[in-house]
Length: 424
Image (cartoon, rainbow, N blue to C red; front, top):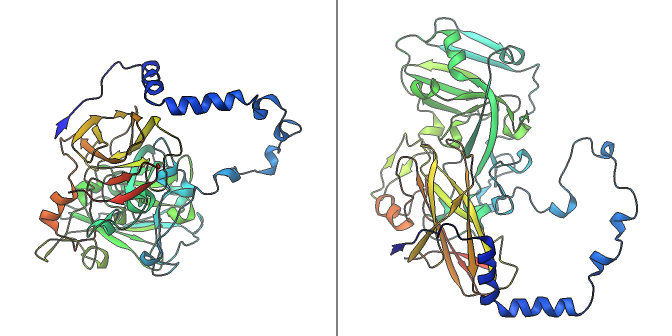
């Protein structure tokens, strides 16, 4: 295996010159189209240019145009026990950049998305505190606020792939994730307002929905970067994302990001509730399970080309793109291979990525029309390198569910179609 950095200084013009030489058939086809005459979409006035369009008042809240109606959340029937206990996957194959629109962002609920108004909202801080407190929504708005971009990833993201390639599309293999700009109050400020007693070492956070989803979080994390959020991407949280208030636990598994946050109890020990004992634990090859694996390790996936985003043109320039992230910091490098890991090239990272947030990467590739086995491999700011599935299985076996951050392989066929496969 060799690592070959992408040649620096290669211009787009040179890249396209190489493309022309490598794909004479494509050029000939384009020439024959031009020879047939002028393109009426250019030379003739089209219907959309012959009259007025819709006024802004026709859509007081902007929605996607009908041509993008396929860019929606989806679920997998055998993963969803009931509509009130469902998992909805982000269409990462159809998005670019890093910010996930709220309307198509991954969400998971255990007993249905509830309608809780700001007027009816209350947040209690209790337990091992000097002064138990109850805050209204209006109270929270008076605290100093911050905005941060964070990814939220379910611990079960890619979990169906432990035993083999099963789901055919990046939306389904890696779509239990979203990345949004959250605005809210550092949880630290609310805990300081109540006054944490010396024996307090943990917090237990609980939601207002019927499932009473609750998780224990070490006090150290709560005082570090946890955020009590009431906005996402500049607007109020959507109902399914915990309106009016949710908790953000940056870099840690999504089940801890409690929605409809109603209570923060300071405790001496972990509560060890249902959601942190009966599940959200990691099964090892010997059958034992380990808990407290909250951090989401470095991971990446190519979103295009992929099974839901096939190549639709002939040989020539191809932009390979995807997402990378780490719960331990930033992504320092992403390598991409088109031959199943025999050789690697370093992808270009989009600028201005944030700590514990999604990073977008691109590799400008000259596709010759042959089959490819494409993979991406992320390296984070701690030096951690994303492992292969074989490496993970040596420790975890195949009976696990959570924290699968393996390298993903797409088999791109000569037709441009792609399939989820494994390579050894």
